[in-house]
Image (spheres, one colour):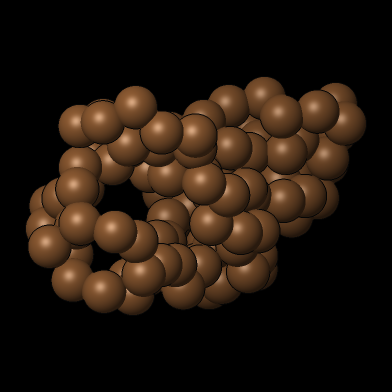
Length: 105
């Protein structure tokens, strides 16, 4: 996708073996340039607990607050991999990550 200036990164995450809630204690979001050599940039820790009725419908009411959101940027023009890393409360470590590629204009 293409973004301009500041942009929102959002999604959902869940530990399907969690005892309560989504089981995700934190979501850290990073941006890494794809088009030039550069050090990755920490965009921030996402706001957890966002309502996701679609996830609750698919996986059960335990996961109704599995959403997360972060207002990010602005970043310099270029192509980036935006990666969200998920902290598992049950295991006490980052267990998973998801990446999308965006072009900043």
